[in-house]
Image 1 (cartoon, rainbow, N blue to C red):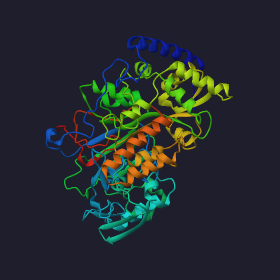
Image 2 (image 1 turned 120 degrees about the vertical axis):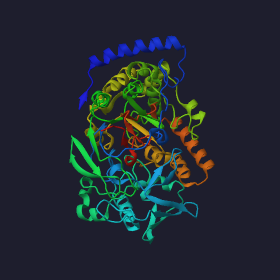
Image 3 (image 1 turned 90 degrees about the horizontal axis):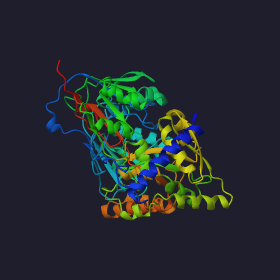
Image 4 (image 1 turned 180 degrees about the vertical axis):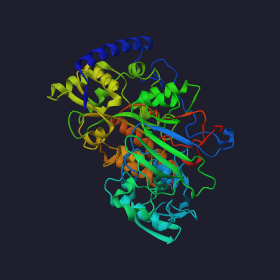
Length: 542
């Protein structure tokens, strides 16, 4: 763990105040900053879901592609929450998210309901085999889904528990009966790995052989198979010769390397040491967009970079202190000092282009106002409340921690910044709930089940333990209905309510980008950076 010193606070505090004075003098307003706040041009979506096969030419077979990740892989077990970009390469997915947040069949052949979402039937593609020769059938799906129901730590358990019963109608058809109608049920079989998905299916034979150690010995029906795994160094995958999509994958090999340092990761794709990086931060995205030898795939999505308040202990059980933090943070100054003048601001759960967004939510969000923030802090302190807090984050967010420390000091809040590596952060901070403020990035392709994870009581990503029965009811209504109008209304009411209550502190949209060398073709991705690897190919001669 690393703590930020008082010298850092004083130095950055002077810089922040200077930037804020310049910005405020130039704009003459303390209202919400526009996207791209700070004077630079706004970052916009570019090829958010991948490349255009029609313009990329005829795919070439062969070659090895190297991927730089922002963290190491913890497990290949879908019931273990971790960010594993290689999982889609080994397993594929039963369903696939569409650009509008819905789901379409992928490994599955169809999924539909005849009774408004209470009962669902999934039909599987015939002839699909796991890489060990075991057939992908209805019983394999049932066995894997049951694992999520049985394991309390599964990131998909919240939805899996909605299943009242499962049965194999025939060898290729699974029937799911839910405890109540759920119009969004198919998207749970299409989710990214970290969100929690029921769509990654492990060979039953491998589960019988390896049991709880399956995370080290994955066997799926995806385009690649695990060849070598050296934790902290690399994961190598080889082409699955019995893959269900004829002629794919095009590549012979994939190699994933953990490159946690942002500068080293970007340099690695710039100099060709790796072919692809899964970028996580603004600085990588901004630089890559200006680099002619790189291609960028990016969409801001919904949610984004935010601060969690801990609702289980003072001072953020008091709304005044949550509002003070929101009003004290100058996003124009943040953009100018740490985001290349291209911070894409966020004041709400959904982005302005989303049908689920409402201007009422944006208007309900408190604007930057130092004097009001000071008044709120003084009121709280006068009633005996402590205004000393801890902000805990990862080592990659050290400068951001210093910025927050300096900004909150200006309104009377003393911040102790503590930084952890990713493994420590997950175990000692967010999972344990031991923080006052903490950071996260929460970008999603589909509002269900991501919004339940983020704001639902007991949600697996609700690290601040925010809880509101009205919010829970709106989440349930939005997920259950098959009526898009009713779903839209529920999500709009949800967005407004969490803003009125200041459930989190919005900062920015996310910068989760896929950055490739220009000879990498066939990118097919989610906004979360998870990819479908069967279509990737290298446009190289020789």
